[in-house]
Image 1 (cartoon, rainbow, N blue to C red):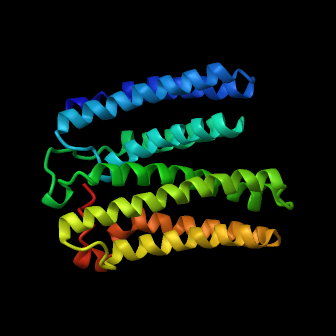
Image 2 (cartoon, rainbow, N blue to C red):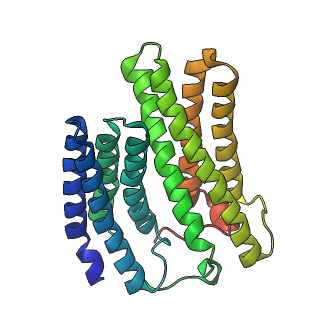
Length: 263
């Protein structure tokens, strides 16, 4: 697809803006950081919209297409976090992660066709995936923070550091919950039932409950800081299984109505 071949130019412009924005954040140039991040997001979102128009369907069917949304929502999550809590490092972090997913798409391009199976031709399809991708971005940011606190810092995390992590998990879990609600409404429309406990839904429920356990640990007893951080890492592993790992499970290939193929 010709438009997909031009993805690199949109990506380069966006990444350049996000990089300069991250530098501005470290220099306490808040207005410049917010403005450049926003411009980069607009450029990247313009490409997604052009792809949407070209495909004549939401670009959310293949893993490559969902990585596009993840690459978009990571800087957006960083911008929201920076604007709300003014963490200088968050724009650098979100840019690096976005670049990783962009590079995966550049080095492993996938076939993008107009074909869309009947179950995906629902008004709930787009909001369900978009909300989930934003949730994944916030929870991914919280996971990196947990890795830093457990394996790099190696000392008792400060209250400020845990507050950062808690805030990102709270926002991510809220959007995860909304995404599950949208998914239930979509399932009712597509298959006639809200929930069936197929492999995808089972992993989604396990992921949701694992993050809820983290929130419970943090609210009930702050002495469980290390246990809470390990719980956060375990939750992210479940999230990866729910997102893409299920595509490699033979049982899911045979029974899950949510497995549409890797391409």
